[in-house]
Length: 266
Ligand code: NAP
Ligand code: GCO
Image (cartoon, rainbow, N blue to C red; front, side, top):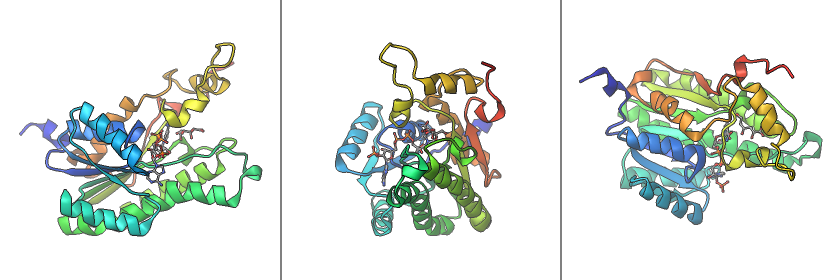
């Protein structure tokens, strides 16, 4: 077989959480094109149905389930259902996430806890649920979708940055604790990607001009553009494939160079 087979996901079962659309959908689509069987979940049936339609239109026969990833009992039940109906999960992508853009002193503790629950506690819950079968199977890949906010702060995203910073360290700890079982746990840190989650930051102003944050990101990105979900597909396949079997605990930033750049002079 040629070297390219190292990047194949043929025969693997991949679960991407919160993958009815956006980044998760793009990653799952890349995995399907690389030979994997796709499992995804979302928070309600409407979103799961939307995802199933989108996967079908892309020629992908995905398995979709309703599950709130913050609900440990529901996650454990879903893992058992997936193993019965589809098979043991080889690749897990903790993609489901939320953000609340509120100045910290105006944010309630409940709002802070909700963001941390989805963006940090849920990756713990879901990873904990799939690791035992990965150990039995003798291999596994866990990919956590981190963020620029795993490294940087900015106004109004205190809960999100705290959660994504914690997710970076959870990634390193899963690597440390389960690497001996041939389980690799890495992160992908997307830059600013054009999805519904960032749509408010890109809205045209009433006079038709760019949103100030849109202009700010263009000036902070050497690539001088927002990322597209397609930009994440290749890195995600690499981290899910045998080509990365000695890469562990690494956060792969796919940011067009933002973290390396002081920003364009005004
Ligand atoms: P998105 O558009 O908000 O999609 C997130 C998905 O997760 C949605 O389908 C969402 O459902 C689902 N979800 C939320 N809470 C859930 C829960 N409790 N249980 C199950 N599913 C849940 O986000 P995205 O832009 O594609 O981002 C996906 C991931 O990448 C997130 O972790 C995000 O933090 C991260 N990220 C995004 C960017 C970016 O620029 N877009 C950059 C770096 C990192 P709902 O539609 O109901 O919310
Ligand atoms: C924000 C954005 C970012 C992106 C992403 C950057 O409000 O700053 O939503 O947080 O979503 O996480 O990597």
